[in-house]
Image (cartoon, rainbow, N blue to C red):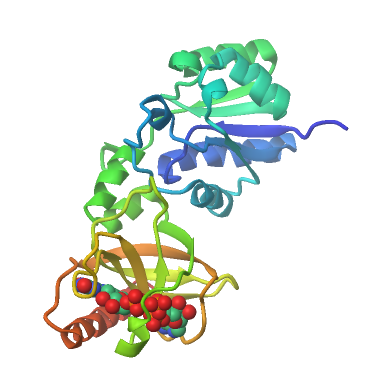
Length: 302
Ligand SMILES: Cc1cc2nc3c(=O)[nH]c(=O)nc-3n(C[C@H](O)[C@H](O)[C@H](O)COP(=O)(O)O)c2cc1C
Ligand SMILES: Nc1ncnc2c1ncn2[C@@H]1O[C@H](COP(=O)(O)OP(=O)(O)O)[C@@H](O)[C@H]1O
């Protein structure tokens, strides 16, 4: 059987921001022209984290969220998640192109960013990639950097915004709302008693936790419907002593059992920091105020 032809974007694509979007859009356009599958290669571990052997770069998105964003926002059909292991780390840049991308994945056209370094010791670069593609008869586009407000869009910059809770600005550079997908877990069952049941989600290890506090969010259910939710990220000093971080959303205008469902939560705006309240009554009053703020936010932003 003949292998499917693929047009492949190369990168790590953490967050799938507007800079990545320029590559991914080129991939879908070219794939349509060549009657090939629009695809992207990403890695399961950030190269810097493997090389330095410690998770120094907290990621914007889990591999699953990354793949889903590439599919949903840019029409990428095939996300190849390369296992970044010792073999991959020691692979020469030429072998990565010839054996892995062309040989194993049927690449007929490659798209990379202006600063993409790859292969053993990062010896592969855009110029070398373009040269080798020409020799192999494979198409190649190198996409220049994308700027907004004179700032180069980068995962590193967006990480600093999210760590500070500056969601609206981060979302401008991402080109979509910052996203967390997880399965609803059981909590302490206090929420229902207090009059605001909450879905409990969590960030995977290695994924950046935004600034603790309360956010206007939107929750997407498995059936494709969505609702606004008011969500706390933090350690809940009023009810907990530990330092375990939870993500808890009170979904507005909703009633039903969501345990075990996979939800996608989108973060839009930080409303306040997390606080220790003197009583559960005061906490509840504040949560209801935040719920009203969330409702107002979404009625103004549609
Ligand atoms: C919108 C919202 C804001 C919250 N703000 C705080 C807070 O500032 N401080 C705090 O200790 N807990 C806060 N919480 C967490 C509540 O203490 C927690 O949701 C409640 O105790 C229910 O816990 P359970 O889901 O484990 O039953 C907040 C929860 C929500 C939904
Ligand atoms: N409006 C709502 N927002 C969030 N969860 C809701 C809502 N209505 C019902 N639920 C359900 O109630 C559960 C949360 O109740 P809660 O008492 O806070 O328990 P837990 O401590 O397990 O989160 C959710 O996981 C979900 O299945």
